[in-house]
Image 1 (tube, protein in one colour):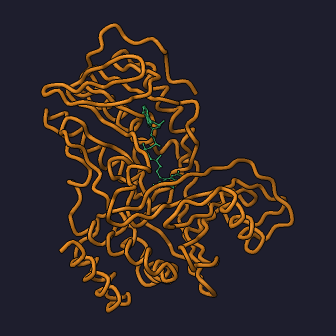
Image 2 (cartoon, protein in one colour; image 1 turned 120 degrees about the vertical axis):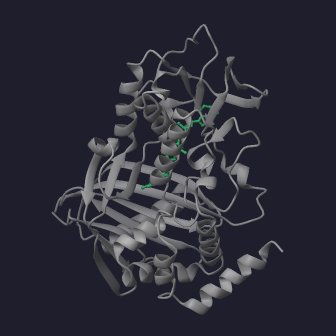
Image 3 (cartoon, protein in one colour; image 1 turned 90 degrees about the vertical axis):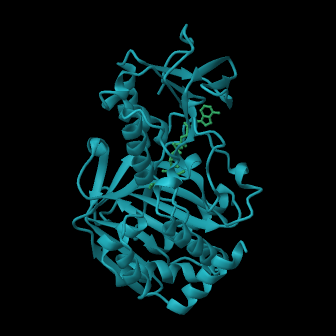
Length: 393
Ligand SMILES: Cc1cc2nc3c(=O)[nH]c(=O)nc-3n(C[C@H](O)[C@H](O)[C@H](O)COP(=O)(O)OP(=O)(O)OC[C@H]3O[C@@H](n4cnc5c(N)ncnc54)[C@H](O)[C@@H]3O)c2cc1C
């Protein structure tokens, strides 16, 4: 998939510059265009390596539908969970669990963007951004571009190395498999199967069937270090051997990746350079879910710009208590990884899926949260919460 030309436009001044044509950059670009005020602005989208974008599936829960609904390749209305000998099936109504593949998302958005005169798509590696007072200078390998507002989705895991707070890495390896036998139930998405060893890190598999024969089987770990793909592949194949009831299957495709789970304060020294996506703190620290938070941030950005106001960084849109809950959960997952499986399972077991999904999307009320917490090991959580409170003192 090519995004554009390598020829820079003759005028290098824009209203907005977006760095990165991944989930956040593309969601922002298309949402800006859909608004009648921001849709008239001159926009530059810079992407360093659109050919090498590692395809991935974005899953999320939603009640209703938004513009991306035509890109959803599968929805489920029942979610299952496994832990030890326990298993659970939850009705998700009124929510649905949905899957969008990044290839479909990118193809759809690029098709829209290519037809617009006011949006310029350019293959460039951005080296630096500098706030010059009334404008931001964006330095690329081949040229300099200016805009009063820049949205930046560049992110390097190495950025986190000096962070003194919590860091875990969420690492994925997923195979799209096709079995000869009809072994899957396409109505049910298995969101978390913890029947794997949980000693040094939290490990689980999710199994998302498209048909009775085909599913994405993705092994995920939350760990303090990054493991090799071979290590993860061994975990995934063991899971398939032990829990997927098939004699023979083909691997139709693969996905891998690492995202941070951290309380690092993603931000920028300039209010003209707004970090977006994972780089803007939109990956939820205690779960890694990002899609919904990216869309929340994008909606805010477009609304603000349409009213000629400066958009806020993502963390300023969230009630502070959610970051505190994430910090407590990260501490538990880091210090007591062996407890993660039972905690996640119990949360879904003892609460209805709708309140859990609202809680995980930072959209629950304090009363709903108290109701969730009181069904968990309260003393243990209070001890962990206290250690978070005194951490920085
Ligand atoms: C395998 C995998 C599965 C995932 N599954 C889910 C899921 O099911 N649900 C969910 O909510 N989240 C999921 N996530 C997390 C998250 O949704 C994705 O990582 C998402 O792609 C993050 O969006 P982003 O825009 O921040 O980053 P990306 O989508 O990675 O986009 C960043 C873009 O910026 C470009 N770029 C970087 N540096 C430069 C530079 N210097 N100059 C120009 N361009 C640059 C990159 O090439 C890239 O195209 C998953 C992540 C992975 C890796």
